Image (cartoon, rainbow, N blue to C red; front, side, top):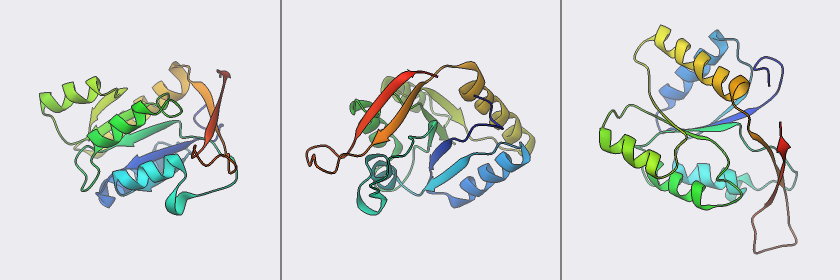
Amino acid sequence: MDINQDSFTILMADDDVDDFFLFREGLIESRIDCDLRHLPDGKELMDCLLRQGKFIDPEPGPLPLFILLDLNMPGKNGRDVLTEIKAIPELKHIPVIVYTSSRDEEDIRQCYALGANSYINKPVGWDQLINMIMNLFSYWTRTVRLPKIEFITSPKNADHQFQMRLDNAI
């Protein structure tokens, strides 16, 4: 997947809107064209992934290439969300990248134990942010192979919020 040619969605769950805007500006500076969606807390992230609440959508659509997940959010925090995502068979294949200011070794250990695919500290300077973004997107779009995952809505089946189709790897 070429980061400048293919369309993809990234979900960013972070209660700090400034971190979202800074990341978005970093994407623009890095010339990475993607659909970056901000969700201010863990509950909205899960509603978005499960297509419930204000995110109900009868049309099929893609799941995100990956999720950027802040740890320390009010309400449903990053650890709770990570646990939920990795417990749902239809979602556990989505890479979850913990993107946090926490440098605590216990947080790092716990996130990997819960199934995080990466743990990244938020950069402190602009050049570091740009470098991190370039490396992050190069890795997840050019280096690794991910399964192609798409939503398939199932309005007739009330027991499932959605069904997914896992196609062969890209």
